[in-house]
Image (cartoon, rainbow, N blue to C red; front, side):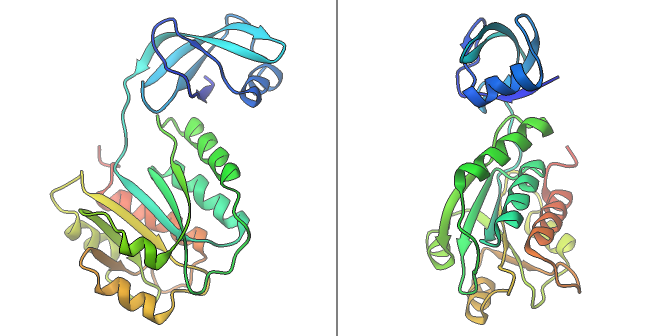
Length: 243
């Protein structure tokens, strides 16, 4: 069944208005008509079975029928990735949504050299991935920030999985040790730029008490491959794949 992320409240008999683009998708691509059903979620009220109440010239009105699943959230995992070329950033955002990241934070490092970022495009990619994967929230994609500023404002109680291209501990054992006994632990995963971190950036990251430095193996990985590999390892070690 079609799943749609909407902004309006989902309560019994509530009228929900999708965006114009979503309405076009429902009527012109999926050929829905009045009375047809779909699933909708808004990140707050769970997942609801909805029906098409009206098809207008410039939009569609849905009616919320009943809740199918209550609202749930995955682990508090955020992916932090140095800005790289547009196509690779788009792949990273899509896979982050599929693999359960709650946020994607873009950072600028000393070796960052990349295209201009369109946050509206990345938001749309995250939304579509969330709709297709069955999750009930959409990852937030945040504006780029300098790495030093990010670390200066680091939140208390959050651990950092630093994917260190110069070497680190085997990821599964290191993550299990750092996250042992707490599936509610907040985590971030940091992926560097294509040219790697500058030496002084690596030194600072390794010196931080909340950092777990890990190696992603003997091969040099592109940023999008590294992000997918790191999130997969994290989910297997301390994430929600066992639940």
